[in-house]
Length: 566
View (cartoon, one colour):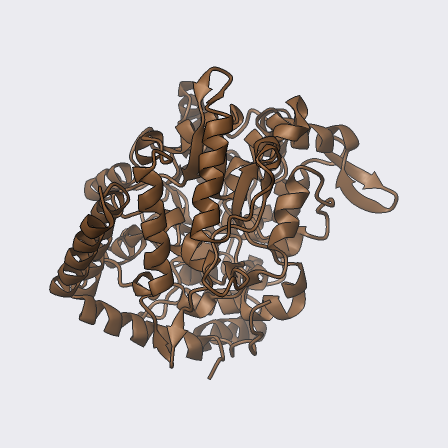
């Protein structure tokens, strides 16, 4: 496990708000056409209701009572998810129907059909953002929306309309996301603070895995793939022994998709497998300059020269990868296990011997254990409320509901008697629901919609109390990461973003990396690799690597103070 640190002191802003409440007792998927129609009808109904009923006074609000209960009249919010792969629609399953019936809130999901960045930039340029926006915590767009005055401070919305928000929100996470102006504009999902590590750390696992197709791996003798030689030999044996899978060419190695900014598998993932440190002598380390990393990038270049890297991996997006995973066409993958859970379940039902299992993959020269990313305080995604939101009161109250234990339970377990019940004294999924979840996740999402089909505000630290024990084939992958997950919160959100001078440098460096990585792998010789690599390092310096590093160091030191590490 990672180091355990003292919880950070409460931020003064949040503490002041809480004390004020105590003293006064109040607070100052691609959408279907019929969903759009429902949204118009719901909005009309909400407007009519608002005209007939005066807005509750601040005296009616309480830091101890859920604000959403004040008004449960029908309303529809537009919610943008910056993930083109998100397939689900609100209102077609019992769980989302239950939440709507309970709170009055319907959701019209907006999901990009193609490039997420283009869609988000177009919306920001128009100045007409949807009511809610959810995107990865690392996205430059977050700072741009804040700097562009496009989103509302959650703390001010809560102070005015729903002080209950502060009760159900983690003060450490609010402090983490507090901006220079003292406001909090976004709240994370899947977030774990150092204080959470103190409470739950022994249960934490990582999503990062190196997996192989079980039957092929065993058929070639279950080779050791930790060294460059063993890795290349295993890929070669798999291709020679199984040139085709169901009439289609085997893909020896699968990676996350290549984007204009790089490739997750070829950056943080493999660096974590190589246990490359995040800092050296108190200074943030440029991990991609580490000799172990360069050694393995040359190994992958050799794999391509040997015909072991299919052209597919350079062009496929997640949707194409999911299809090929379901077909079992990859031999090995350096990939996030939860991203192919649905396909893994389908494979397991057809033939358990053909599932993907986690094994020891690329390692450093000393064969040290990987240091994989565990849950961090930044979480996975961040949700913001647009300045254009149609109803501020209902928006912050619904966010509070989703963030609370009640909301997490509703979206995790669903409606009692439908997807879960109290069995042997414990609230847990009905056997038939749990079976379908593991057998066919896509069908489960449609039939039940629970188990965080809608994950925007998921908090696994809350829902672990109801989580069933993992079953195969998922258990093996999960268990393999135990003891390898570490807390790297202090290194999160240290890269400059937005339109600041450092942010512009950061964008240029990411684009440079995105263009360089495929060239390195496709270099015709090691000499050409060295030339491309040296040119890359020179270009990094010209683009402002020194300024970039100085900014990261400053933010790292600020983060350590925030997290009580100094």
